[in-house]
Length: 270
Image: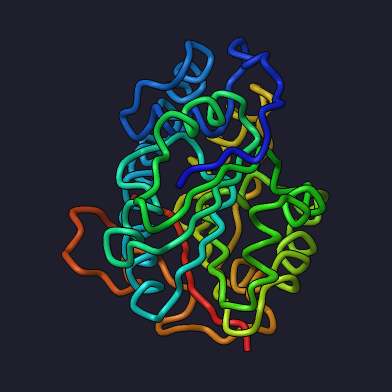
């Protein structure tokens, strides 16, 4: 079963300026992007070629962590900053292992909503839904019917924040946003985060940030301790917050931690 949160959304796709979801789609080799997105991505790659590696390995981290969560008994997932549908999606992975799994996708790009309606089709036993909201709009997210139903059920829920928090500088209070979302989760729920870091090559990533800032996209890349802070009060699953290539790898990677430049972690709410 697939349900949109609402039939009302901004019809203006803002194709004249880049959007992180569409830039990410381009870096993954997708086709759901526009000239402004491609130009921003190519400009970023020119100053930091490793920016193309991070999305691919982030997708692999997503697959490993969702499989881990299903094995841990999770059947409800909230994926915020979901981006454009790129197979395998969270629900494809989760429902492939547990057909009754439910996934709520959250994003603020109208084109993501259009594609989600067409492509995010659930298994007959499970459920997918889409919430048109920005990560910063916690009230809208928690107030949506599908997510409210998930949270009020009392079962553990997985909150997935893949490659989204680095678009929230400290002045947007990302730590407060994550805390409010985690506080709303039932006991036994999980938080999953992946986050770009500049610790391996600060000059290259500074140039990348400057390119995106010029396009109107603010970013803040964080260190390992800064990413760990998002998990305050939670219990880490082994091995904690680490370069994502080291988070329970199932196959060797052809890349190095410096090429991927992402930290990731999974933690449980007591």
